[in-house]
Length: 239
Image (cartoon, rainbow, N blue to C red; front, side):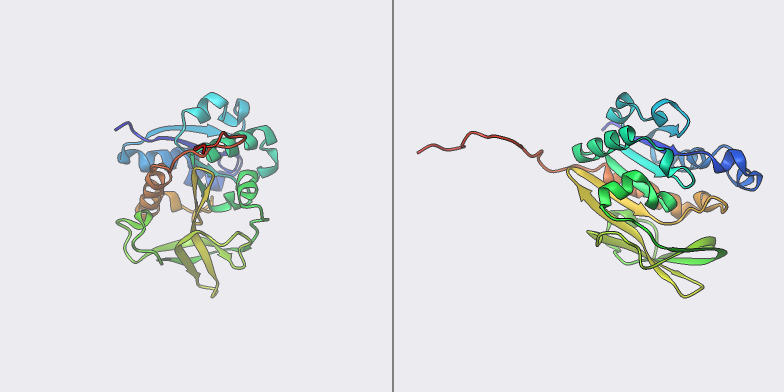
């Protein structure tokens, strides 16, 4: 079996402009995730905002089975042409994993059809991500929960469509809860939103977080159903 071809996209701004964040992710969040999931045997490339076509040309996307997306400061700088290109590939069957503040990315908002807004607070306290779907492949090897500290708080209401499958629910020290692991299908493409990953905290070095990302890569890349036929069609049977 050919390895899953993964492209990890990161706007790569915080790490180049904020010394505190650079100390946590000196080579960028994309590089840290790539190193962290390399042991799972994927074929990995990275792409960033400032590259031509944001590193997401037709050629790159056509050779990508799974796109992982991290963005925060520059959602508005992502070109509509590239967003449309990604959307088309998702509908054709490319998997999409949206991490943390990528909930406000153009591509996630377009695929969800909502604002994808939420409550937040940067208080660097504890988050417990509880597994609420232990039969799902994304939770393989995780245990009952993931314990993270420090992390940023995200709270309900989270303005997304009802998830097709809810995988994780987070609890925060301030009392908030949040739907932190949500799956969707759009066309032939599978989508997973995963909440943890504030840029100032070392979340993407955490073994369980990396295991969830690796598991979700395999899940969104897994086999799809039959491709649909659209448009004018001759009858199957004549009488």
